[in-house]
Image 1 (cartoon, rainbow, N blue to C red):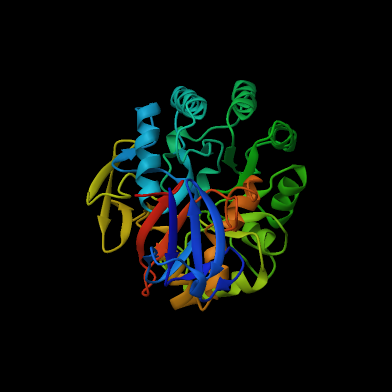
Image 2 (cartoon, one colour):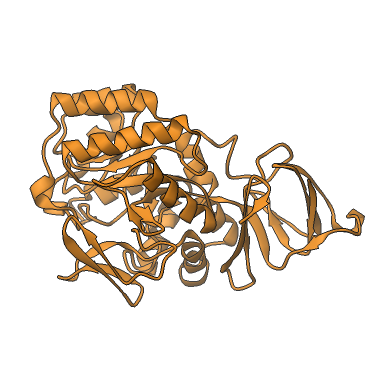
Length: 375
């Protein structure tokens, strides 16, 4: 089926195309043509058409939390919820849990990959090999060192999953294990860590290529002790950012994005609430409350974010002062670069998959398109 879209600004992944029309042929982008040459049977769109998003840290969605009960159908529910929220691909994320639950989720992920599940990019295992001093909402009773069987399980999973990201603390995992994970194809991400600047740099040198939710659950920048946050801003590793204005103050985001011109990408760190109107859920037996744009445990500890990538983009533009082009790239092209999928995601060009979002004049998500089909 051929579709021709006019009326909207088109962000092609690098810059805006004004007075252009977008031609979709079946499930692919056919062409970008001058709007005044478009045929009469066009569909008029208000707002901005941009490449669909990628979200590399989603703890759940559509009412399902990734955890001990996760099956292939649970992952399908999560991916489907995020497709409707504009993410063409996600990494369903398991936070610190038992070895048995980790194995179960990996098994479900391998089955999802074999089934070519729409929206499934792979898995993100956030823990359990973390520093209890920076546990955040993770259950400290489940945090533990990485043992030989854990390393073997992760390396085998990396061979069978399209993408495997693992968040770990470099003070809790020996450098040779970090190197072994990286050699096996794991994207090692440093996070939930109270490490020193030097320890963080050693972790990156050993093979870690990313950091999890910049500034949150990590050692901060001091004048004599730059910590993990300083090592990220002083280096070239990728880093996720929760841009809800709650996890990180807009002024701090502004400074970080001035220090790093590329490599920082947006994540939602969302929970099972995503795509639902639910107000409460359980996390390892503890209540998580959804109130006033926040997700917290009963003691007030932040437990993920009540955020969509469209809203994060709007906050970056409105509150942080980031140019729209960069904010949009942080939700698409930047995470695609980290995963090595920049030839598939993050751009609107002939031959690319027709995975698109439409943002209204106020920046809100008004429509999503996956493979040429409007959801």
